[in-house]
Image 1 (spheres, rainbow, N blue to C red):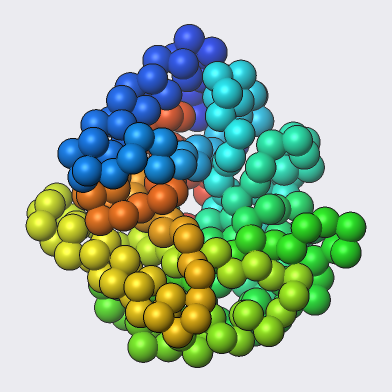
Image 2: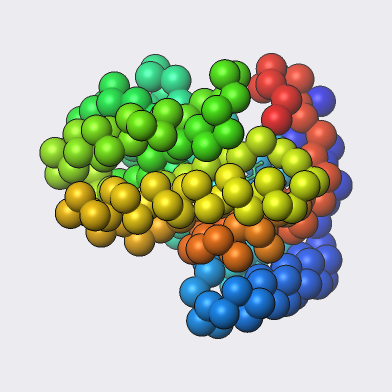
Length: 244
Ligand SMILES: *Cc1c(COP(=O)(O)O)cnc(C)c1O
């Protein structure tokens, strides 16, 4: 199975879906009493071919998110003028490609990965913009740094000039219980406030996906990561060996 088996996206479909999505975002901003335009959109293109990225980019979307190192490096190399964000789990032998081809990494959860990304970030590029991924739901199987270790990791990242620490990211336990969604997103926001009380100026909360972006925006998300609501449903290529 190849990524191209995910249905091709026409420019019209892309425009319509982005329109609907921005309406959802604006409505959520207003409902939360937040300024219009305070939330940015990351279009998560994992498993979709570069042609689908083109259809979405043609509608004015600049920032794209990828989960798998090789697939992400391939797409970012093919479309270097777009802004690429890495949002997947990071194995230490995959950091070089990420450091060389991405502008942002949302999923730093341990110092070793931060050190490698910093050492491998090419000097002709601006510092890599990074977020610390936090395990807000406490699920043992989830990646992400434990909340009580976030401050120490932020302090260590701050020592690396090739990394610019921007904020926190979470993938909460999926739930249709809206109050539970709020609770988990609020936990990330509270952690950001705590970290900033220690002299940091984190300005990014990367949280909220297709099914829970309203709750995330209600709790202060500055960047929502949306895949299926833009690109459609994903079929996972066997070779990734994972289901998300
Ligand atoms: C796939 C993915 C998304 C997008 O999920 P959708 O439900 O398709 O919007 C967002 N964040 C991460 C980390 C992902 O892996």
